[in-house]
Figure 1 (cartoon, one colour):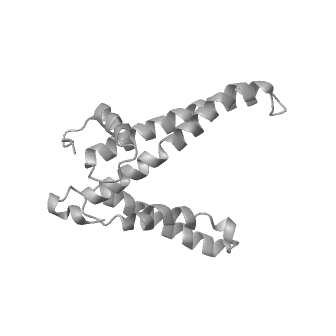
Figure 2 (cartoon, helix red, strand yellow):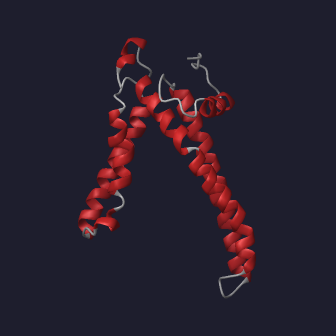
Figure 3 (cartoon, one colour):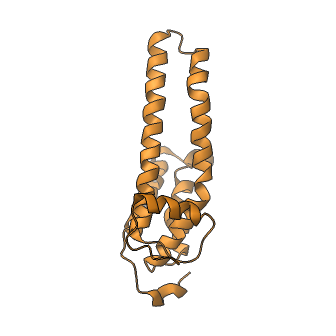
Length: 163
């Protein structure tokens, strides 16, 4: 594994795609959080673009639908979805390496990353509103736990055997 202790934003992006399918090894906090920042910037820019285009089109069109809407949103939306799917595998790989670097078993990733996805899909299970709120609160707590784990400092290399 390359030395990544002083990773910057550009290096984090390079390492992210270089380690696309790398579920072994470790990733530092800087590598993780700079990549998190890259993705957050991408998402914010996408939502600003989509919101601006929608507001402009809806302001000029009383019916709410226009062929211009499809043209202005179609290709950017396809690009956004493709990028989201393209970064899914390397994002999970980065999280696995980050958990390992923090000395946390990667099995906790299932609890803090996948379980919240299931808990927030209560409409599938037909649960009551009260239970849905409880499950959403548990999901939020697990997501916060995921961020806390990602913020943990690197552990010494002898904890490498954790999986």
